[in-house]
Length: 273
Image 1 (cartoon, one colour):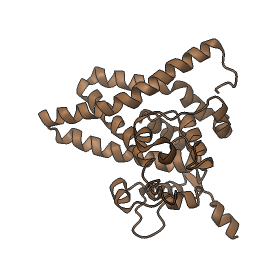
Image 2 (cartoon, helix red, strand yellow):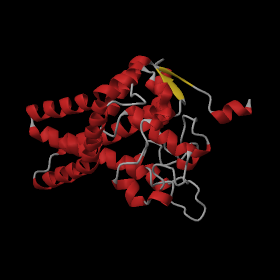
Image 3 (cartoon, one colour):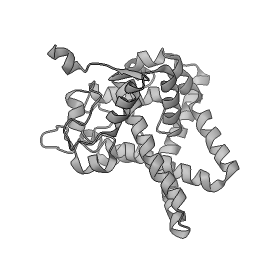
Image 4 (cartoon, one colour):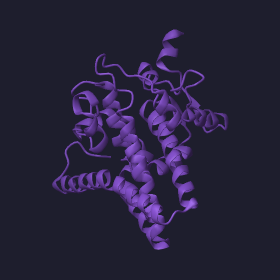
């Protein structure tokens, strides 16, 4: 668990990790471009199918578990399912779960103010899409005290880079083309996640979030229904109307049906009772 008063060794370690975060933030999208160039030279249907599958799979895993379960507590997955989902989230290389959650909870607490970590109004759309978000750690770990006490999240926090570098090394040993493909996938996944932080905050006259039908039907996982989410962040359903496709909610329903988790009443549902 990250200490509140880090030692010199921990400060150095944090500096190295911050540089790794910056390297992956800027470098992985370039890997996507490299993969696209390789596909233009030597097109491969199998690699394209794998790319599309994991681009959606990683996105649905993020929205169902990282966003709705761990950040907002809209539902509670089983501990073993949490381990599997955390592994999938970690290899997506969009940041450690505890940090990701801290950023998003701070965003909701300070939504569209100058202190919002990724407000397009105050930070700019290019900043939101292409840079790391400024947080004040370890102070901002106050947003995630519950996750810091969780042994599973703490384990993945500690071994996040070992997991990713181990996977990348394994893919390189098996076949360098697999490594290029995987780096291209997670580069696209990371860029898509950042693009989602611009979608829904695009009305500077009213500074209100909105739902994006076009992006909702492209992404399919439910995240573009941004107004619905900000109206009630604890609701496990982001899509409320028949045309608001929400595969993240369908995955949650399936997990609950199989006995792998349980739903929680949203704040609005609780207040209505």
